[in-house]
Length: 260
Image (cartoon, rainbow, N blue to C red):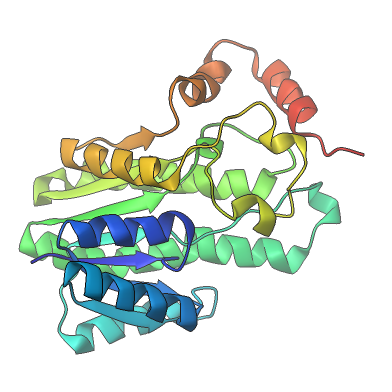
């Protein structure tokens, strides 16, 4: 039986990854900050699907967090076949007016923790000549996004990083996928302090179940990335190809500008 490690597993896309993989008889290591939510989810999955579930309560923003996760998994004797780097958050607003510490935490979680976990688990996959990594990026990673400047930049990093690893690791039989959802029915906008602003306007929300199914299908097919959410999101990520960059970014600023 295979084993998957999922970060940010207590809610949203991470929780649905856990449910979908458990339904496919994959054992799980669930990582998040909320012990109560993780234990509740773990108990449910064990009872419903008969899989083994290990809970690791860890805030991945903390220094050395990725190493603590890796060492805990190693000491338990579990081998990770699928790493899902899902943990992350965004922050909405004018860059100079938002919290500096929150931006630094975002970079730590969205980028540094993801790179650290990948670097620690990937060598074992290479040695076994099998394994998979899903890194959660976003459609925001395909272009600059005013008022989401740091978040979009972290997701652009994840997209570029993941596709580079996809190319490097084909020879090892290890698959790497950048998952790029659009607006999804999660707590993301609440956490980002963006509820009620134009960032959500005009875009239909995709269910996390659809995002996860599309991700696992794309992983199986050996894709470098997958954009979920239908034709509308495909148009969004390709618009920059047809407009001068200055005009394109100016139009984005108008659309994402906070309501007064």
